[in-house]
Structure formats: C-alpha cells, structure tokens
Image (cartoon, rainbow, N blue to C red; front, side):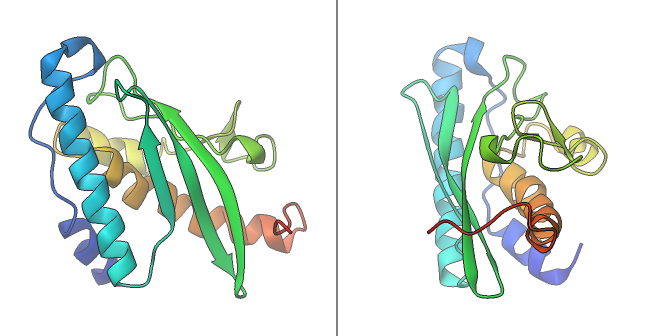
Length: 162
C-alpha cells in the first residue's frame, strides 16, 4: 500500500460498534458511526483535491446510493453507485454496484456489482468490525475504478456523459 493510500486511510475513523441491520438500536449507533466516517473521508478527499464520491442512505441505513466519478485525461466520467447492507454486516462487506457498467467488464458480477473478492475481502475480514463503508470505498471501489475505468475508456466501451 502506497503512502498516499495509508495517509488517507488513517484519516477515516474506525468503526467501534459491531452491529448489522438486525441489531435494532445498536445498528442505529453503527449507522451513525458509518456516516461520521464517510463525512470524514469526503472532507479529507476534498481537502486533498481528490473528491470522487457522494453517498446517502435510506432512513434505516440499509440501502445506500449516490454518485462516484473518475477523471481520465481531464474528462469526468460519472456513475451511479448503490449497495445494500448485508444482513450479516459487518462480517460481510457490502457488494458495491455501478449498474450502468453491468456486463462491460469481466471484473463485475450480475447487476453491476464490482469484483472485490481476491484483494479486498480478505482485508475486510481481517479488519471486521473496524472497517466500514468509507473503508470499502477507499480500499475497494477506488482502486477498482482506477484500474477498470481507464481500460473501459481506452477500449471505447464507455463515453463521458454530455
């Protein structure tokens, strides 16, 4: 892991509450921690001029949605991002999806869920329950986009939105 990644990762608060959607009030405490970590990550990204996603959740914190973007050759490529919190969260990481890229790369599952199994999931398992959604974006979606989006652009598979 490079120093820049380590530095931005250290700026994301770790989660303290081990709770999932079935855990009632304990989940709501965990949900609050998730939002605080995401806010810290977004603020850190903006401060370092690396802002690349916006997220929000439904009232119960079980469905998340927003936008993520990637700049390639000074052109912005923006995508919808969505995921549900698994019932077994935080033991199981969320499956992050970019639905409009469904079927456009081999490193994706049905529904536009990005493939994180080989690199990210072992890291998540070692750091449960300290890692949360912000960590999944920083260590999962971000690196995935850095590899896949330029490749899809160069192959002419995706185009910038007008």
